[in-house]
Length: 126
Image (cartoon, rainbow, N blue to C red):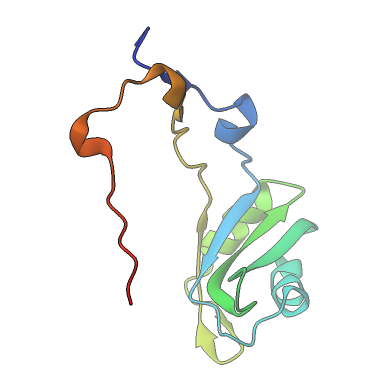
């Protein structure tokens, strides 16, 4: 896309690496903490990392998290159990797969000629 001011770059290798010990945990209660998540899943194996995802603005739980075991065999133990309940809610653990790397697009506006309909009209309200 030479000359049009748009550059695409691929994501880093770390974006697409798969950790076989990592699980996505859906259906979490709003009250579930990283400690209670760790306590529940520690019976399946040693945990390297445990997190509950939170809204950056409100800091409220988004209802899902991740658990990473040191040994991938622990994931099989979790999946072998049919029912998982934490904080009075049925939770849904799944193997975590990385999102597909999306190309990062950067626009260099100085190289992109503007057309008449690219401009936005601003009016002062009185």
